[in-house]
Every structure is written in structure tokens, then in C-alpha cells.
Image 1: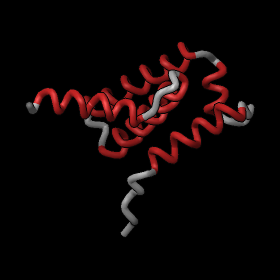
Image 2: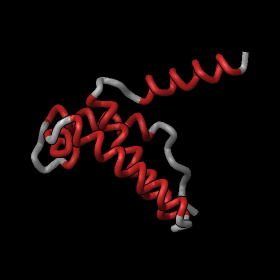
Image 3: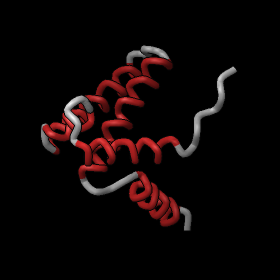
Length: 103
């Protein structure tokens, strides 16, 4: 039986993404992606969103949906980093919306 995922891993991944952006290492996919410009990063987010939706809509299976969703989340984290944002910013917005709806 495998261990449960680390709940802090997404924060760790955000740090890895930021470090790769700072290093601008040519061997880093993250750095190469961002070097293509913000529009290229946004395009990858859109591509991965469509692929995630299609995997679900076509009943491609759990593994396909999880894989595409992982790609989507990674590219979204890159886009947030480019924008100077992170998951905490998104979580705060979601929390504020939730609280506004549950008052």
C-alpha cells in the first residue's frame, strides 16, 4: 500500500517552480516554457484544461484524468508564478467567495 500524498507538496512544487524560473537553466522545462512568454504559458494552461476535460468526457479512465489534471495544475502553478501569485492567493479568493455565499 502506498503512502498518502504529502499535503504540503503543492507548496513545495511552487518553490521548485520559482527556483527554476530564477535559475533560468536551459535544461529546465519550466524555464524554457516561461522564456516563451506569458502567452505561451497561458496557451499551455488552456491546452491542458481541454485535455483534462476531454479525458473526463470520453471516459478515458481515472489514470488519464489524473494525469491530465496534474499537467493542468503544474502549468497553472507556472502561470501563477509568472503573475507573481501563488495558490495561497487563489485559496484566499475561494475562501472569500465561500464565506460570502454561506452568510
